[in-house]
Amino acid sequence: MSLPQKPPKVRLFFSVMGVNETVIQEAVMALGQEFGVLSCRGDIRPFDRTRYYEKEMGSNLVRFFAAFRELVEMDRLPLIKLRSNEIEKQFAVEGCRRVNLDPGYLTAERIVLATGKNFTHRIYLGQGIYADLTLLFHRKSFRALPWTYPDYSDPEIIGYMNNLRRDYMAQLREEGGTE
Image (cartoon, rainbow, N blue to C red; front, side, top):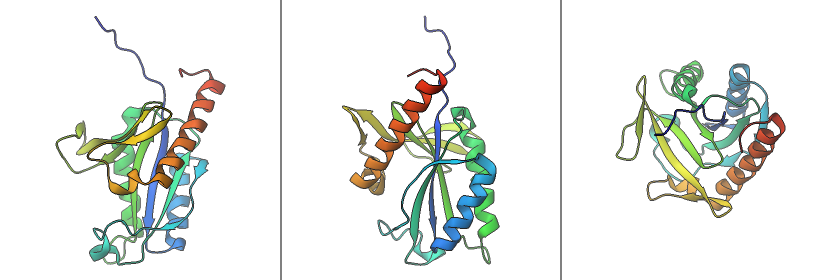
């Protein structure tokens, strides 16, 4: 028989996509007010992997990854996604988003994103939110799955996530958490 155990806390991160660098910086400040101090940040880069957001947000979008120092309980993901949706609305102009905030968490074994969209590989978490298993850690690196978004398969993003995992594992050791 398996006995229920409380899992280790996880590293919260966001993909922050916006119409320009100023909006991204403002959104990251709003996230900081909610989730605390940044622990690891990526570079602001053009987001040109899909035209999915173009109709609502326009072209020439930029993206930034922001991870937070305070570890969180993984079952908070639905509430975090709902809160990030509210922050998106605060930045909207005439009903159109100027920023897209996609929260996820990192563990020693995986990357999970929150989404409001159902699909065959997604697990319902409650409150209209699903968990998207996006990357698995195997043989010293995160690896894409058949359904992984193409941008998360990019070697640069996988490198960022590997660095984020190293930081997370060191924090777990430092705080006496499970490794």
